[in-house]
Image (tube, rainbow, N blue to C red; front, side, top):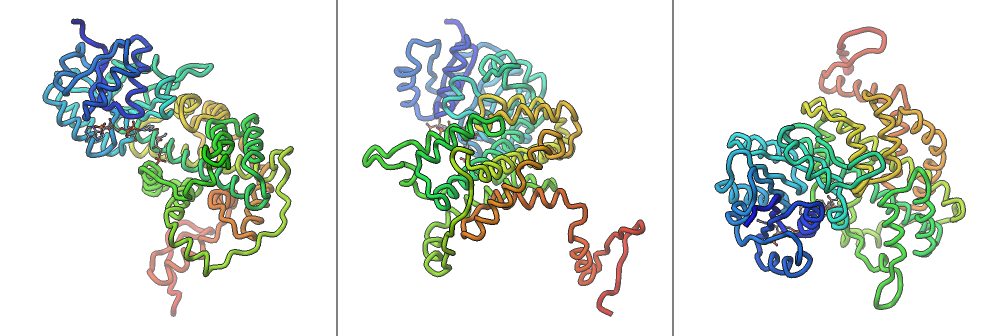
Length: 472
Ligand SMILES: NC(=O)C1=CN([C@@H]2O[C@H](COP(=O)(O)OP(=O)(O)OC[C@H]3O[C@@H](n4cnc5c(N)ncnc54)[C@H](OP(=O)(O)O)[C@@H]3O)[C@@H](O)[C@H]2O)C=CC1
Ligand SMILES: O=C(CO)[C@H](O)[C@H](O)COP(=O)(O)O
């Protein structure tokens, strides 16, 4: 029996779609899942009639593959990935390649690349985005590791990836854990945009009294614009139009207001803090999920900390796309991308990843959850100036700030008066206002630090570090 081209470990939501994608692109496959009944039902279901066979254990999976073997692990991140690696390693031979397509912590990937390469195996840490549909039809993929390892699967990945007008949504990211680092930042941006859209929904519902369908019409309009056309805006329209099958009312209103999280948003913020990148919009979105999870406390607090009455505010009309709210959404979305790119710019240098921003924008233009038309402008900005310090400094984005900052300020001000939290909108406003302020009040912070702790300060009028005996 001829050996298969490709192996998959983990027939979950992502794994089963990715293997169908590989098979459709001409790569015969062998699949293994810890719980064998899932393998059986897959082979009798979606895998039926395809060039896909099953393996009851990892030894059988390895034996059924041509050499050098190419095996994608699509399992839960963390200890599950380590378990699979240690169980499969005894059967691997020199030159075989493991690819981790899960949402791994990038420092875990660094460790695994070193461990596996010391045994003469290849190891790729690859961020994958696109959910179930993307995995099947063409995901966005961010592979990192040793370049020669990537080259041995380049053809497979290029065929599997989403394709946009000017090429595939996959390319080599860089060494070590860089692929998973970039995927983590992708998810941080994803958290930001999801929260931004949720804030706009809250304002339209509570300040403007709009119904689900009326809001969905606004999202449909936004999705037709150059600035906001994106996958997340598109699915928000769908979510808002969807009715509960029991009583026909808006389904979103039946969903508990507690957001889950699996770790990548937190890792983005931890990395940003460690690297000294300023990411207030992304941080605000993470904190909003944390605050949302305090449901019982919030319900109790709402009986004591009385909310202000919501007055009447002018926030545009559906026919103008709720203009000030759209301004807030556009600038906050831009800020999320700008902050994500900033983390990667610093990480590229600090971790020697040598990231190529236009290629990352290319990978994100199709297939992934944060795909949007804005990414074309982001790619252009970094192509024009590969050393660009902040996206906001590019002419296209500067123009957006000029055009929309008054609308964002209006939304933040009205929401504050009405007692409606808009953490991403207000963080974005502060981010832009801070970034465009040539002299911030941190001179006083420096004075206090020196006053109580002799930490010294720099002066504006001469070089060096100074200390004053403030309390004499
Ligand atoms: N869902 C999504 O939209 C996306 C998910 N990801 C990432 O991809 C990975 C897989 O996600 P998804 O497909 O959603 O996950 P699922 O929850 O659908 O499936 C998890 C898979 O992991 C396997 N598994 C769990 N623990 C172990 C273990 N200790 N040993 C061996 N196998 C184990 C499960 O096997 P069993 O059936 O035996 O339990 C199952 O095949 C995760 O890292 C996730 O973060 C990345 C991008 C998008
Ligand atoms: O990686 C993804 C998309 O890109 C996954 O869907 C991920 O689970 C999303 O993160 P979280 O569950 O924390 O919201």
